[in-house]
Length: 400
Image (cartoon, rainbow, N blue to C red; front, side):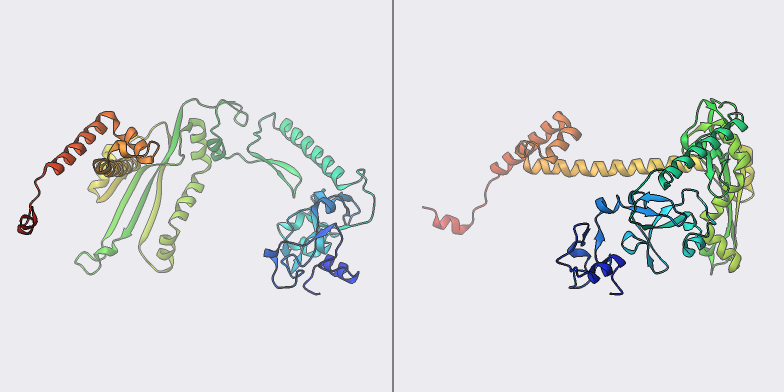
């Protein structure tokens, strides 16, 4: 009985069984059973039918009514409690969004995420909208909207829907300008935060990445302990061009975040350098907003003279693109060679009309090449037929 949920325990006390139970409950399918007992399932026995429980009336600790449809349907398991309808532990989001309410369950008061949740219990009362959770939510939404309008008026309309959020703890609207959001949405035209149109010139944010480390591949040689420095110039922040205003604001506001992001990408090397004394140094240099990548040839030559390996990100990307194109081209050539070999053996017109090989032949080879292969195949067959057959002495002795 201890493993059954509260609903199942009450029904069993009333004399119901797994073969005889009210129509407002049901049993889960066979695959949810944990033993031969039909009630021994992952839900702890019977569960309410949703069409029934969603229409029941529930009450919050502060006295507000609500419909079951408003409750969190999924439920959860926290601190050994299954917070579901069947245990009379259904939960809703507090309509007042009070995180410090002492009426709610003590376990919900302690949790950082669940502090806005509240337990409701089913009651045998007629539901009324006046004074209900649904009405409070509507009033609260209206209040939030009014605060939003007031917040916009206070800032003289210089607010952005994409960059403002409602602080549930302070019950107020906040504006946190982040150029990365503008870049993500590809903002153009009028910017309400800046109070003017965005620069129509488009560009990107570039930076240089300098890495210095000890070459472990030279250990055991005369050059053991040699340090190597390489710098990759012109690395891009955004995947696509954005307004130069967004780029300039990113450099002003987000340079530190960019450095931390790059360091996080190399956290393993930095960790071992700090904890185990391995020689590894990372520097993010020359963060800049430009319409297109610029190169300082004299600086590149100076770096090379100083023994620094200089690489440009755009060159690397171009080489990688060329290698990828070459790989695809080789793969396509191999497919065509394999298909031509098959046509020489089988014949184009012997393939099924809508087969994949025939479709590829039409697409890749064309009518002229197919005709050439067909002639080659027929000539090969004719040569094979006209080839003289060598007869043995035994064949002559048996001949009439």
